Image (tube, rainbow, N blue to C red; front, side, top):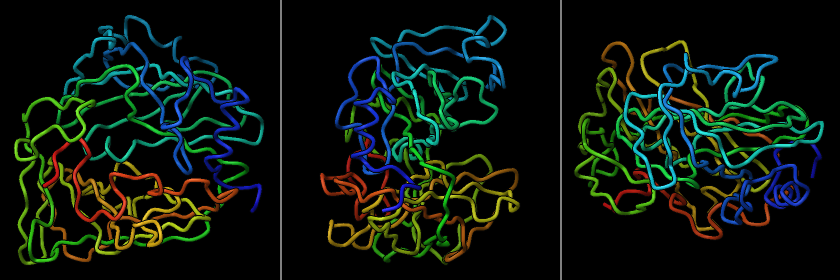
Length: 339
């Protein structure tokens, strides 16, 4: 395998062993994914007046003054992060990367499906969700629940990091379109119910989906996206991520401007692979309407998967140790009971 590309799980363990990835408490084996590592919330969150970036020459701590921080929350016994508010939480993991190694961050799948908007911030950053080559310092996550308030605790995993050796090496792209016809036997999507109540991040499978979601029945292959509403839809195409590649979902046409088709974008090697039980797996699309009502058509392209090479094949491909989302079709976050 090439020495340029996305690091696999074995190399992530080596980074932990060397101290290049360090946790306030030992990094748990369950945090390590085939091509990424889950990052954990610390014990504190700050309610912010507004989002910010520290900028060149400044740490995040430098910016946490009384003009920015409105209130400090202790997460140790659990604290509610409310919709429409912006929070900043130090992460338990810090990075001490060697030269030639950078990191990119993204919300976990379940975070995106809860409509919780997150972005990771590093010291001296001029952009979100990035740690540059050789970064040495702490990490923070900005959290903004959009539809459901969440109950968060230390150790909760809302975001993940992917590590890249060398420059970005996009190999190919796959266009993803939306399925608005389904199989004729169930809903083609779900629309979030506003003011539905709290989501406890620790209660996997413990929430009644009918309280939080309105099923969207199959119709004529068209769906009007209402401004500001949040939808869970599925791709028409089955998606397969080979073991020698990792992928990230990106907007297909940002200039359309009337909807956003994803929040959580990392796809690990092994997703959708038949030999690991993933045959037929679809990409779940987290869609939010913007500005004006917009008609979405069955088969309309909405996003693209950008593939990059792995440095090595993963020791444990996606789904080999079990997964909530392998072989998925239309599926809500793992926090909801199965429908």
